[in-house]
Amino acid sequence: MTRAPARTAQQRKHDTLHRLEHDVDVWVATAAEDGGAPQLAPLSYVWDGAVLLVAAPVTTPTGRALHDTGVARLAVGPADDVVMIEGVAVAVPPADLPEEDAEIFAGKTGFDPRELAAPHLYFLIRPQRIRSWRTREEETGECEVMRDGEWLVAG
Image (cartoon, rainbow, N blue to C red; front, side, top):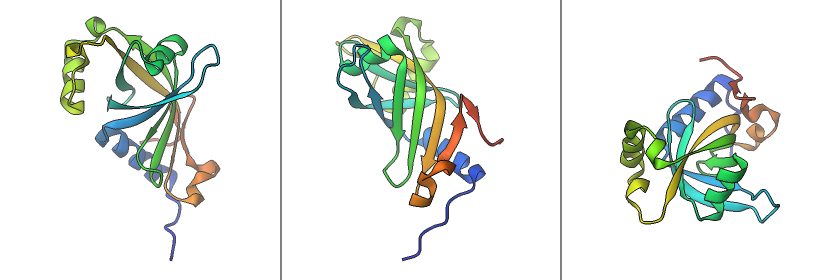
């Protein structure tokens, strides 16, 4: 069986952006400030080209950790075509999120946190580092497409 060659950096960025724009679900990994057990939760998201918007109940370990630490690691896609994101999270109460953004989130994800009984917070997650890979050849150093919040290739 022949393996596909590693993608160019430009193609990897293009594929990463495509996945971020078209997928809806993301795995979010967090840990409490006090060194509590790491948590992994599936959340729905919207990508606006610069940040991911997610929502979580304020009483869950994920919601509390995102709020308290402002740090998240995310994974989008299957194991053989994954985008891994390290980002900074900022909590936004539903009343403070622009109505247009809340409507876009509800339309894309199929649920509206503003209508749920459990109080939710929105979180804007700004990527600081993004890695993307499909094959073992891409798992090594060449998989990074963003560092320190800056894309490593133009376009």
